[in-house]
Amino acid sequence: MRKFAIALSFLLLSSQAFALDVGGVNVSPTVVLHQKTLSLNGAGIRKKLFIKVYVGSLYTERKVTTTAQLLADPGEKLVRMNFVHSKVEKEKIIEAFAEGLANNSPGVAQSAEAKAFLSSFKDDFVAGDTVDILVSPDGTVAASHNGKTLGSVRSPAFAQGVLLIWFGEKPADGGLKKGMLGNG
Image 1 (cartoon, helix red, strand yellow):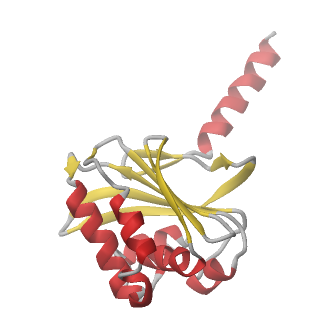
Image 2 (cartoon, helix red, strand yellow):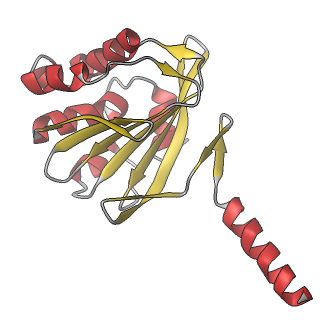
């Protein structure tokens, strides 16, 4: 019985060792979506004027370390935002997404797909909220807030544009980009 207790302790400790604490958020090493396991590629903190807004995590089927690898990878990609700031108004989140698209993908920033995607955000985000942006191989971008589906858009060009919000030449936060690409 003592050996079993020791083995169980090691198992519990080793499983917790794989969880990553980023800015007070427990970031899971894997997520399962559509019967596929995605692995944590990297994580970081999104800051705006020295204020911690959210912990961003990138989950992929295969490890990537550059934007080119991320865009070329045919697998599922998930950007998870765990909000740590007390409140982020929906208008601010929509504005940030729109700015990211305009800065990195001007060709899709004013598209019908962009307008549909941005209109799916209807609530403010508060500390403890989780927002997932899933980019599928067929170009579908799906958003959810605390597990509730907000909407989806299917457009490979728009899907690339959404990824470039975080990973483009003018990312929302350079430190967050490095962290999510595993280079932080």
